Structures are given as C-alpha cells and as structure tokens.
Image (tube, rainbow, N blue to C red; front, side, top):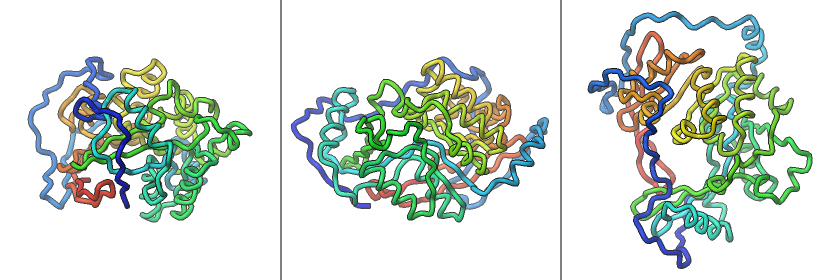
Length: 362
C-alpha cells in the first residue's frame, strides 16, 4: 500500500498531537465485581503451541431449538458482516492533529477538499473481516450501506473482486441520488506521522446522530441475508452509523433465525458503556446474547472491572445468556479462548502492516 505525504496548510498544532485521547475507565461497570486479580502468565509469545486448562464444570448452555435446527438447513453463507463499511484513506503527515474537535474538523475538511489518488485508498471497517474470511475460503456477504459516489463504487469493486456480495441497506427509494452527507459512503482518514503513530478522522466523528439514522427497519433482503448466514459479525463501530434499535433488531432476528452472533465492541465499547440509555441497553444486549465475544484485554477490563483477562472472560461467560466463547486479544502476548470448560491460549505472530509498513503483533 502506497502512502501519500502531505503538508497541511497553516493550521497550528499548539500541543503534542493526539487525535483520539484514551477514555478513562469509567467508575460505573456493567459487572462491578471485586475478584482476586493476581499476576498471571496465560500465554508465552515465544511458544508456538496452544494448551488447554481444564476448568470446573458449569451447567451446559441450552441446546438449539427445533427452529434453529430447521434453519441450519437453509444456511448457504458462512459469514455476514453488519454495517461499518468504509473507505480508509492513508496519508503521511508531518504531525498528527490535536485532540480538539474544532481542529480535527478543520483538518478533515481540508483533506476532503481534494481527494487523493486511489492508490491511497483501502477498504476499511468490516470489509477487512469479510475479505479475510473470503480469503480463507468462506462464503461471505456484507450487509450495509455505501453511497453512489466514487468511494462507494470503489468499495463495491474491491468487494466484488474478493468474491463478496453486498446486501444494501437502502431503505429510501431516492437514497442513491441524494447529495446529503448522511447518504454518502463513510470515510476514515488514517494519518501516519514520521514516528509511525496513527490518528483517525472521520465525518462520523462530528455527527450528532448515527450517520445513517434515517434507517429504521430491516428490509426483507437484509433479513434473508441474515437468515441464510451461519454467523453475523457485528462491532462497536456499527453504532457510528446505525441506530441502536436497528442494530438490536438485526441481532434479535439473527437469534430467531438460528444465526450465531459474533460481537467485537472495539474501542467504542468504553463510550457505549457511558453512552445514551439506548446505547447502554444495546451493549448489555450484545454482551448477554452474543454467541462469541471478541475483546482486547483492556476492553474486557473496562466492561467487567476485572484486570485479569481470564477472570474477565469467565465473568462475561457467566453473565451471558447465549455466550459460548470469549476471545481475549493480548497483542504480543497472544490471545486466549475461554469457554465454560477450557482455556486455550495461542501465541502471537508478526504480520506486515500496510499503514506505515510496520511489523505488528497479532
């Protein structure tokens, strides 16, 4: 992936750059428990083998209903992703913009005034999940919205080349011809400074409501896509574009259709935890009703108040209604898969990262 170097017009950065300052861990927890969080060493980055630790037996999760068994015969899609279809534009900058909302908005408007060459564009968001799954040989679809402009057409071309079908969430008949920002493909400007630090800036950061708040119901085509899928993958960034009620309706329909729900709250989990009443309700619903939760160790701690990732994962399992797996991602220390009967640890491995050509742990 190529990176364009740009010099900003005279916009002054009066303090050290930080685009999205980390949110303090809120004092209010969904699960405010006080368990022993002694030191642990669940995974060794130098080990190439996984291992299993037997855990005390817990009551088994309920077996699938007869409805789920019948629905399983209709599953022709392996993975469907919900929302978060965006184009990343990767640019080298002399320094990252400051954290103030006004300054970041000025930078974004400056960048948007002259779109860079397509060689700096990437399919971002949930497109990455679908592309990775498709390259593993899985049959994938993406459920979401893209506009009828150059960025939307780029995204459609990328997904088509990867063999991924998009199920459009176009509720209004005149959406494709609307010039409104709320009907355009989401963009994310990925800014990389000389030290290879990253900053992110998106129009969605400045919307008072979700970007596509005009959507209120699931179309029959979207329902068919969910029903035919074995897995519905959702993440916390879905809340930047879709209303909580619409997201919950997709989750509930997936459960009714016998489709497994995978949820990765990502960095948005912390803000959802102290967001609107509707956002908090949706987050709680995800944590209780998802079959699989995927979180970093920091995110697991912020949602449970438990620093030890194994104990945090076990707590998420305990409070979940349908939760079968919790995957805790720990960067260079690998990852942990926690079930009601076992813990499986996997060591980390290095991958090439196109943003700045760094080597990162996965």
